[in-house]
Image (cartoon, rainbow, N blue to C red; front, side, top):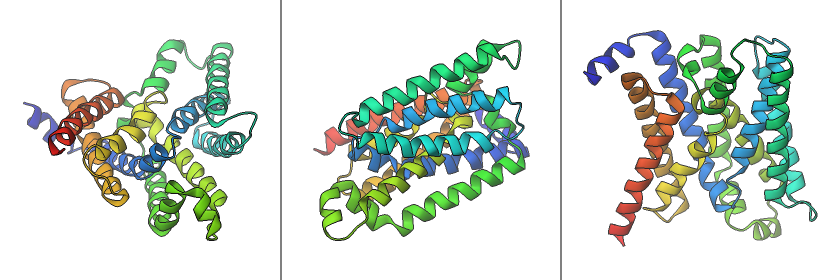
Length: 278
């Protein structure tokens, strides 16, 4: 029965759009997930997702048809701000993430409460936080925006792979040999912001961190080299996203929660495989 539903599902253009966007988002989020985990900066995704929620609230209040015009610049600006404040000796990285993310989340909900855009405020907020079926209502313009941004993210990772590898493992040594570590850290933060904005429609603002972290942690249970972990993380992320979308359509469950549930299940399998390998 499920195979019949899936074959019927992929016949429609909106279904193909959802699969294309889902695979691209999963691919991009897993590329830099390994770097974030190794640099112990995993929660930057969580912080920026809350910022994106606040930006979406502003765009909704202003009745903008294209919310990306506000959400993307605001999220990138806060990514840069997080990086700068995280280097401040008075406000460390985890404190700055908590400060900005909680403030943005509260500000966004307050705006939506003061200037409601619909009669179902709780439903709108829940859909934004945990994801909805908006991934199934994408327009061709939104798909092309996702494709272009995803190509830029992938190109950045491939072109600067060696520099990213160097900054990830030994930032001090990288600076000593002439690598502009601060600039690459800044670019990584900007790219993560772009990925967060892209993933909002897929899994919601509260579940984005899982999309970034779980594939990397799963791959680390099996492989040890940076290259192998990155490749394995990409494969796991894409498979989980594809499986999550198809399962959610077949059994009528929320797309974002289903994808994360598949990621968690795969993480458990990888932990068992890693234990057997040892």
